[in-house]
Image (cartoon, rainbow, N blue to C red; front, side, top):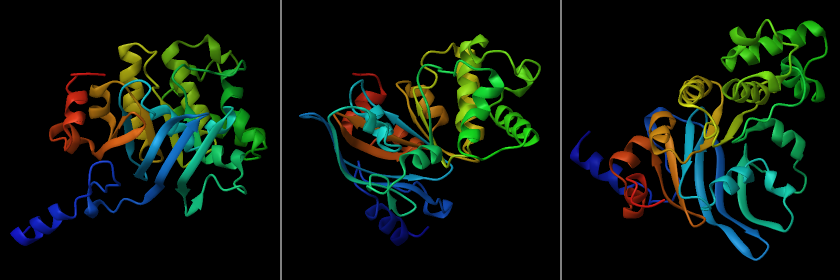
Length: 279
């Protein structure tokens, strides 16, 4: 790259907190576009003018202190906040050129495309098999038993769980260990073939071995899905995320590719958080 090109590239770098493309040569396709997103719980504003571009088949980590808006933002992407009383949302959350908050948006269809894995494993009180096949049946994605069997095996294989449970598919999902239950919930989420998987601190309740298993799984799943994860673990963000957004008091302070942010943060507040000076 010539000196002129380097200068031009540096001058085009967006301000912290604004949408960013890690590498123009990577040709990442846009998955979700967010502009001027604001959210209130009653009179309390939880998100303030959030702008971010999230790219397909990457892991994007949301970091920041407790109560800074990370999980609230995550729930904006599949309208889970609609289930909370007195929530008001303004701004644009766009997928495929469509505003997910538009009145005509089918929320059920949206949540099929944008699946969610929660902090605490929450398998249904059903068999392992029925946990995986329940949503595909509801959405009429499978009908014949052979189709259901094939889907269950594929989802469990993709979630790294098949070999451990293939001989006990009719046993309750709740009979599994915590780490296995979380992978079952991931299998349940991917069984309907979403475009995006949201993960709200998916390893915070797990032991180190199960955590490492889930992290490896995220790295494999991003070949098929866009993954957005909330984490308080800076080492985890550095290990698994292609992009990282740092939230503070409802705002995105800095957003960049993870290696750049962790090696050379543009904002001192980001550096202080990453290095453990507060949070």
